[in-house]
Image 1 (cartoon, rainbow, N blue to C red):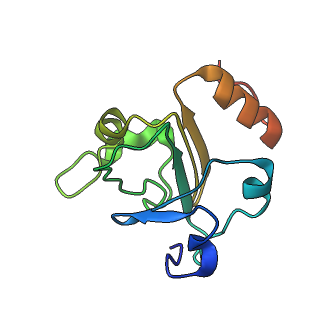
Image 2: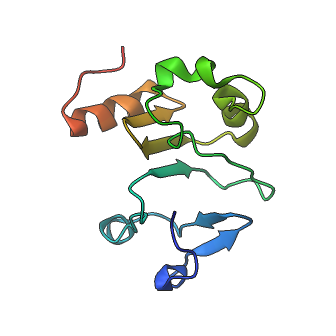
Image 3: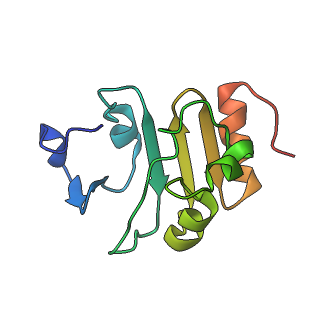
Length: 122
């Protein structure tokens, strides 16, 4: 988990509820992106985020790929589709046991996948 008490909260970073909000992302911001201490990272990108934003991390469900998200729809589980509909992020990227990207448009997914050396989404 990103330590929100760390000096990262300078330079335009802030805290909203239980989430850390970055400043507008520039090349400099991206080059200094803070890693989590546990290696399980998940970031959502908004323009702008809703003030009452409530997110649960998908990457914490070890071994589950985006294609298998429905397996988590049980009492006490996690409904990724509902969260995305409610939060309406432009994009999200995460890393747990697997790396994932999701976005409103296929071009964003394709660009990310090309950078990662994979195949296109369609």
